[in-house]
Amino acid sequence: QVQTVESGGGLAQPGGSLRLSCAVSGINFNINNMGWFRQAPGDQREWVATIVNDGSTAYAPPVKGRFTISRDFVDNTVWLQMNSLRPEDTAVYYCNTVPPRNWGRGTQVTVSS
Image (cartoon, rainbow, N blue to C red; front, side, top):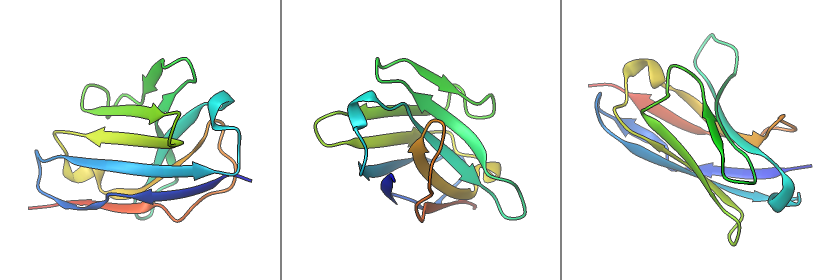
């Protein structure tokens, strides 16, 4: 099983930025693709971004150009830099392997003025 501890969420104003962090354990981090997902109230969980172990990335259309995913193989950490935040980015954000396994608790992101 993968263990993930997400942090860095909070309240941001529209147009603001947040940086999410995810500490990963329980798996061979070096060979797994990692991603961020989110779930807004009343919606299904959706994919946000993926980073492959060779460093290549992919983004969902709503966040492309605003969010950046990165990873550190020394600390087994995945980050999500979120810029130009919008109210529709409000959700609980989770990191996981891609494809996903068991889920952590996530971190709440709220974008509101």
